[in-house]
Image (cartoon, rainbow, N blue to C red; front, side, top):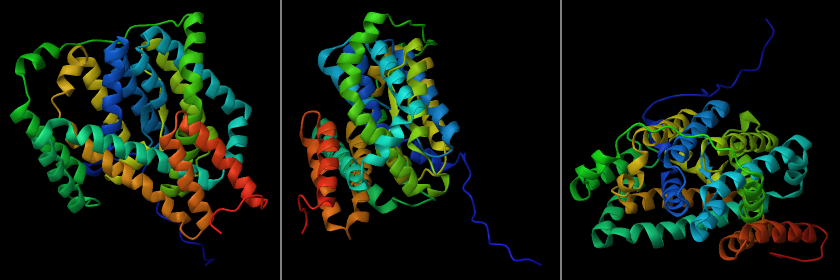
Length: 388
């Protein structure tokens, strides 16, 4: 009989168990505050934002069959919160960025960009995002409830350290349960919770040309550098790190990014992307299939359909220090990815420099992406030396 090479076991595309459920809350600390801030600043329809965010999660989980979650566009959200930009301009900007990414995808320009940007710069972008997430966790979330909050965060930290990687007792589920118990004892207002319950569906929106143009200039243009660096290039790298057998391309990732934002604006959804931090968060807390993303989407579907009118009041009972612990471990996992550059001293220093630029400067992701790429090619030609 002819000998044949053994086939490697393939991971299932979808699984629904306690580890997938634990992974499903791995990105909650990033998404929830952004969505709350956007709704408060813009007056957008909360049912549309939450339901469409949930549907996009389900779509991504089913499409990719791996923990490829969807996140609100971060630069987009920051500008909306800071400038109180109304919903109609948000929908116009979302459509503009969807069209932009669609054109980059179908023309193949996104592949050319991916070949141009070297791996140390991608790792630097991830490191910069990790610095920002850790800063947010430690400066904003952990201190939010004063001394009791610090004690709660410390308990959550210890539980996570002890149980991280435990497949039988997933750390994230135990930490979330700790937060729920704390909220029920110290924060729950039954009257507020009862007023929030009721069925609400998204409404139809048709973005006007003026809002599309305004949204493109105010919101889409500042977002594109971050999207290219983190949502597409860095996410492709993470997918290769964790799921090399899937062989995902930047064209696939940019296509689904575009598709979601071509649909979202018409039903009141906030613009979304894929993100390397989101995938790391889900994976770090146990997710290995698209099941975690589907479960995460179901959570937001339930919130949007049945609790959207009191969403801000209801979610504020959940303790921010617990979200801070989850966010901190997501950032640590993301930062640790630079370890594969340890043998390449120049590449490691370039990644660290890129990360510091991304985290510390206005339009830092654009500055870091351009500066890091230029330095990489200058080093290759011997024009500059880093790490010699």
